[in-house]
Length: 598
Image (cartoon, rainbow, N blue to C red):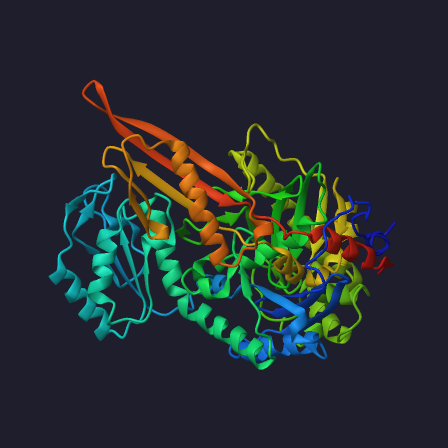
């Protein structure tokens, strides 16, 4: 049988069985939720309620006029809807990620204090990066004070260059933020937004904290424009509702808080993919999630419906960070990837030159191949033929066979990178968002696909692999659905030094005196108290406060032959996951997903 016929016979749009465990929860009573996924190419908007997916809409993202983009999506899904019936809006976005990757960011200032040890110059992030004197030791004690004259000179230099936003990092600020606060007080009247490392992350790792603070600083303006566009769009529609934004760890925070932590929205888009698939994944096995978009394919693994976690933090380009993130991977293969012949061989991606030629783009893409194959019809097939013909000529095969080869090659590349990701995960300890999975070897046998071209890939990927492949219900807008269903998450790190008789969580502006008898159990109790307050302040509801200890350590400090005190460190978190009562909505989405054959 010709490969073209094999492919066409595989295009049944498949979905997970709806035989799931029933839920006794009610989805947010009769309230509705807006889910909004702002991508670099399209913005998807959904309105969800107890009855399922009420409305959905897709518009082209205009990065120069985000207000218009967001408003267009909101107007479509809220027409004739009583604003009082909508309880909240949850957003995901790729804008901050794209700004970093494309290096479209303003100049910022960085003031870094390291003290003895490795020179912070090794961790330089940008041109306006100043290494300054002053240091705090690993137990939070001042070794060398801040040089005020030095800081004031740097302030003048940055002002003269017109720099608006600044990051401040001291090596052990998570033990004592005194120096970061001192620098802040010396320069605060001269700049717009100032980010301090101890407020960005409570985790130790000086190089990663520098990178994390830098990324928060450079994406501030991009995120602020997005923030204002969404806020103004909702206001114009009369929607005075809580606004949440999806973070890289698959949880949400309220929109106002995101201005202080814009770096948390990096990789928000891929985490929306994961959350959009979570409700429909296997509860007993590992599942590979593929979000096939226009520019990239985003990949992730679910273990018993729980996402894997990158325990250290996001790595984006040259930046290793402390931004808590799901374990995801993005590859430059999507429906709009540039298809060409290079060195006599077929090459797909990683560049995207624009949309498919069927939609007015400049170069052939896998989407154009699908038009030639007759799988897609709502576009200009003649333009696609014009783009694929030179590929066919270079390969010395007919037009249809060239289109088939392009599609086949794209599918095999996706599977190759998926297996490479699985191998990489298995070469290191495997963490889910809940805990370290001792001895787990990840071996998914199922794939869930979402994204616009999902049904066209599902059947053929199953045909050429040993995976069972299904599409996520409402695959075109599954990211927006995933954002809408994600719960609010956060974490708190608290340390105590009983010799110095202090307990502190600098990230939370918390510092108290404790007795020498202070214990790890008391530290956990206090950390949970701080966590609950933090979660409620950034938008959590009582039903979603599933808190747990993520890390707990205690070391004796010995002087001579005697224990001089204890060094205690605990980390607690609200578990990432889906909102209370999501099961009923997931059942409805499954029931409403139409069975069809392409």
